[in-house]
Length: 115
Length: 191
Image 1 (spheres, rainbow over the protein chains, first blue to last red):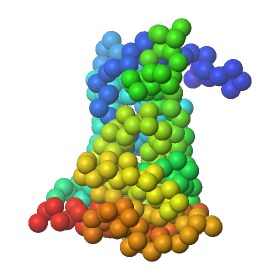
Image 2 (cartoon, each protein chain N blue to C red):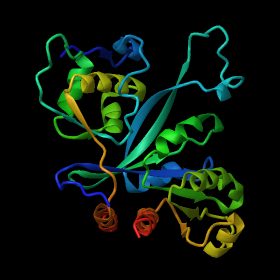
Image 3 (cartoon, rainbow over the protein chains, first blue to last red):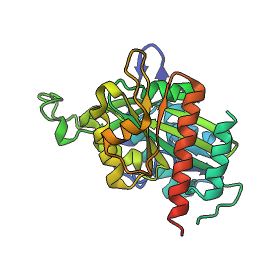
């Protein structure tokens, strides 16, 4: 994969250039801890994921949170949301947002105690 | 009550709030793996006069660097800790951060108790379960939890505890206390 980052010079492409200057997309509503998983679907005709979207798709082969994706890719959250919105529009990712149940909370309490 | 299939990954969000310098980052670092996050936020009206945008009127976003903590309970169950930005001009980020949050830890410093008033007001108004953890700084006068509760005019059901966020065991107790409180609030809402 072509690296667009140069450690010395910083990003060669400004973040918002990656998303055509857009700041709004269907990814806006994504919570920081929404879990993103690749659906494994073949991109439908006409849509070619960009390099950053390819990086996201390989990252979310296993479920990954929006915050972790932004951190791993070192991209601003707003940019990641737009990239994810596009992927979701093309059904390449699924978005999970399980709410906390009593069972989960008890598991968390036990897990924290065991740390 | 919500049920989820056991294989569906669950991520929970806990907020760490409190005044500037009260130990939010220390708490997160004591108990979790710290990860950097960049957000580019639209400048709010509140930034006008603070952020001098004259000559760069095209700039409508500002970069906010923040850290978050991650605790893996098991595969598919992760707890995220987000510190709320201290500066008033970043209040607009609070709504996003607190959306769907399991609860919040409000860190207090007895030398500057009023610093945590805005956080307490915010979570009370939003109905987000929260606890108050009094970070015991070296050299600061010790107060009992009840004295702090009465000084902050907290409801009886809001847990208040003393802690030392530099200590992992203490940070752990703080988080366990919060999740137990959130569980209590959750189950109370079901009956």
